[in-house]
Length: 179
Length: 105
Image (cartoon, rainbow over all chains, first blue to last red; front, side, top):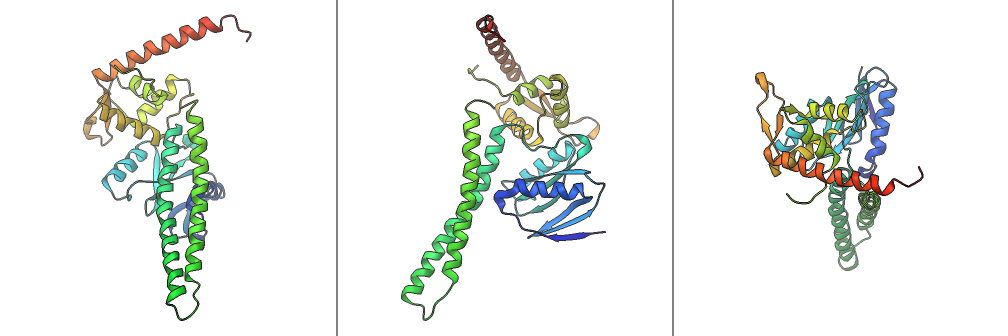
């Protein structure tokens, strides 16, 4: 039986999202599909799967991504869903701990990729907000909330970038003393 | 040979590839050789394999019996890198042991 759950996670909270998916798996629900804020589950043995989420450089259909996903599958992982460049992997818990990266540099690279995704959208919102404020000040016949919404979006995205920056800084510090 | 320290992942990948082996085989081999200590994650392994292919330290070979899994094998340059690393590790162990000989454990 298929079960659909609506839930929202920020892009920088991918670890919380993984944790939640693993909790769902512990309850006997395995992820089978994802689209905006919509998670589809099917029944599984409680705790059957461990989940990991990865942001790829290209779309999952890109040859480089396909090659990577095939490699993941050869190591016992399985792609269960994807959304834009995000891919949801799972692996049977019985096959041992499931990690995507075992060195700090790869974890750092993943954070930098997420930052590259968020930063331009943040700047875009800020730019649009400034243009809309100018428009409001000089041309608009009446008040509009739109530029305020843009500022709000920009602030949230920059807060996310700040979260990612904290992780990047911590990884870089660790790399001074170990791999 | 440049004077560089190999990562643990790279060292175990190179050690695993005297005979052609696929990605999952490398993961299992590294874990076995290190008595379970080194668990290479697939994403890290993938990145390392691609870099080693680019550097020419390993090369990919067609899998046997139409097996779709790609297999890899070490090259002469890869072997040179392993020997240079062993030399470096010997130096580390020698200095480490000599200088800590009198330390209280």
